[in-house]
Image (cartoon, rainbow, N blue to C red; front, side, top):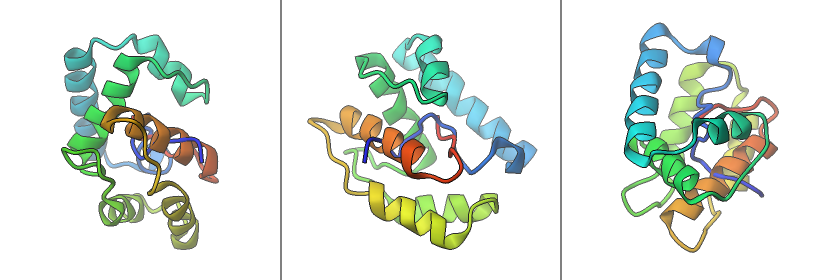
Length: 136
């Protein structure tokens, strides 16, 4: 697969419409923190949300930051599929079998470092998901 758990985008839980106001606020907080910390070009994030991927170092760091803060990647960049499954289930817009298919396809993506791993997982989820999961 071509992606990352990660976020990545953090187009996180199924469709943004499915998120509660509280969840949207939390994602916004993570977004502000991670864009500030990584100094990523926000246009690259917008493009990634549309499926236009880049291997830009700062974008990869942004993916990792988002996924780590959300809890779907640990500090070493290891995917936490159970956390992701819980997050998707909480959103309620993706069927359990679809979520499990996406998780199975993407959870073993591994890059040269935790940042590349985050990008690969994001791209994978974006590509495999029947609905574009917004993680980042």
